[in-house]
Length: 156
Image 1 (cartoon, rainbow, N blue to C red):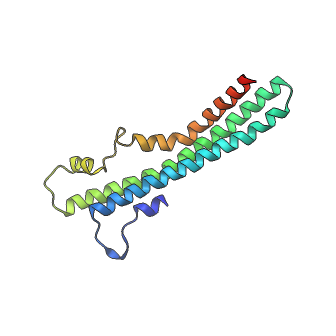
Image 2 (spheres, rainbow, N blue to C red; image 1 turned 180 degrees about the vertical axis):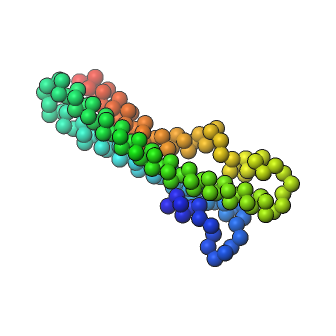
Image 3 (cartoon, rainbow, N blue to C red; image 1 turned 45 degrees about the vertical axis):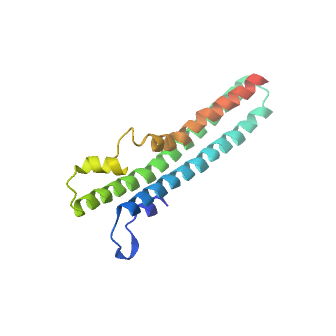
């Protein structure tokens, strides 16, 4: 879906700024929805993996199972974060390039980098912070699930 948001318009319609902005918004919405689903999957996975520790009476075995749970959910969290990055980064770079070409075709006199920043197509760490957080969300869900599990053990 992320790649579809970055595709060139159909039927040979010329690109325009509003279309590029709309596709950028669709791309961000797709990435946000994907991250939400993948975070819920990590939390669900951590829940059913931790379930077995409730049936173990040996403390050393319970700690070992908690470590296995953390390692499995960390692996999948990092994998999911990399999947989101692999979908988002090429698509957003393509949209930026299309905006750059649009700037050139319209014969604007302004600095292209400044214009791209004004239009929301500048790729910078600060400008992409919300998307970076979204990309990292599945990887951070695993330690959060482990922390929540530790808190429930503490309450017992």
